[in-house]
Length: 489
Image (cartoon, rainbow, N blue to C red; front, side, top):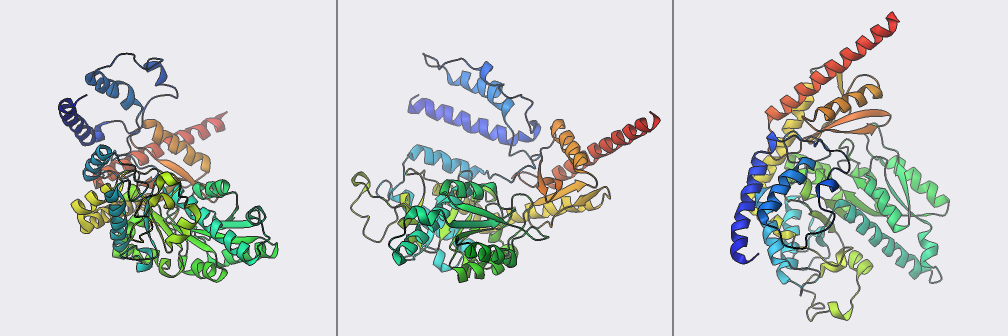
């Protein structure tokens, strides 16, 4: 493919993408395929001779689209939103064209410097304290990770390195292995599974702190766990506070948990993967209170709810040397003449992989083309739609709300057994008109209704609720008939 054909095919692809997104509402949100559907539709090996672009596009519709779950459909209410916007798509095209691998400043100065500035822009949108910003000569700063899972792992590994070096400085005879086997990390029992996975990869114990009646981690439970473990000779070193849990969007109490971490000299990482986007709105910023005084690192995903396509996970640290001290290696082939100038950042020292894409382009395009006010309006619309759905649930006495609705997630269920709600979810997802996923809150099986799509409107929410109510009526009717049949027998 030469430049001339690329121009033609590129325009065709833009039209295809625009048609797909404009017509996505008409596609079935969840596919009908069974596991293994795709292999029989493809040759057993790559073609020896070139094939045409036309044939490839035909096969996209014939082979790929039948197996796609349409995350950007206005009838997709599962998981959490994954961001998509036209400015971000355009920026991704440019990122692919430039194709740099921005592991160091010298590898592509614009890639590094735009990221530093964009992370400061975003930090200011969140009203993060200056200590988290790079500025002209700040000690902290931001970095784009691939996911919140990566950010948690990076923070845990940095904290592990920091505490190990401190203990070895105080007791030079201590080995790293002797220290690591005593290290303990903590998170709420509502924290994402990626926190547990970070503990596994980091080779440290992770303990779940029982959450309260609102599914939040509180100071008393954390303090009790710390005291118990210290009495057993263990070393608490890392706490993850979750703002907006995956199950029900609950919020750990930073203003309670933070002072304990500060007093115990324990690294506090704040994971706000979903909810963090909402903190650009003044009315939700209080949910982040405490980050100023107590957090060592903070992360959220613009690629969830801030219209910046995946992958773009924003992470800030108060002291950049905590990261670079853990990950810095300088083989001669990566060194460059400016690295010791004090004026630049080499992001390879802030992350797990060496290579990195020019992801800040997406932020730059989106922030400029939407503006802060446009992004705030987008968040507020989703929150309003979630409260609209909540009100609809309240109007039907057969249903109940299971957790406080703060942002764009509603947890609800039919009053009755877990088996009843499992059957309802099965009917919902089998019908394939909308898509939901469940969670467990304590011992209850709960349905999650997340406002996800950029194009979702009140009409979609209303139709989804009527669909759910209709299926619930059918289910309850069928159960009533079954009970009547059993009595007759």
